[in-house]
Image 1 (cartoon, rainbow, N blue to C red):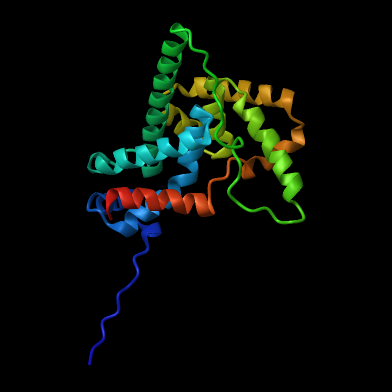
Image 2 (spheres, rainbow, N blue to C red):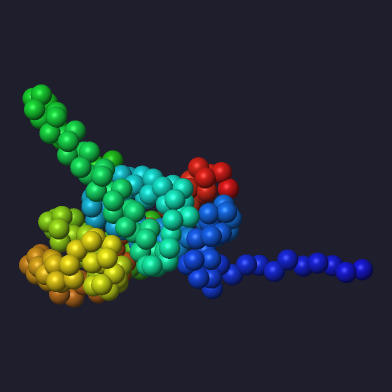
Length: 229
């Protein structure tokens, strides 16, 4: 009697083109892999534009739905992650413009507007080790507050380059900016932060703006459920 055993698909070893084709065919495993791998970068990018955790999550989810609806147009001229990041940037910028229009309309009508955060700014999703929890949380809050106070033009470039570790060329492609502009904005953003933070705090940047574990799984679940896969 022959017993057929199914071989698990290693999505991590696939090319971006192959992943895109599987996503277009609504392969649940491929979609889940793409979402899980890109969640943190896309969340950080959206937050750098919107400066609001809940709105950033909503923007990422909307961007995923748009991306998977149009993934047949992905031509692999750039990486799949870069393609997704561009979509998130456009989604977040669109939401920010809409909010500015709404805000301006209310002001014109004489209505005072106050932006209230629904939760503590950028509270992390990963549990800290007991012996370092307080110190790490204080450092993270200092970093996130300082980055949030950067001008819009500097903040997104800084997050993509310093937090996400993208190259200058990748950042320029995502934001559709000249490479020289990216370099200038990064330099000026660093200068601003150096005025607000002690140099040794820079080493904590890799732990800032966390979006993992429960948050990551929840967003992945919502995207999969909405896509019906």
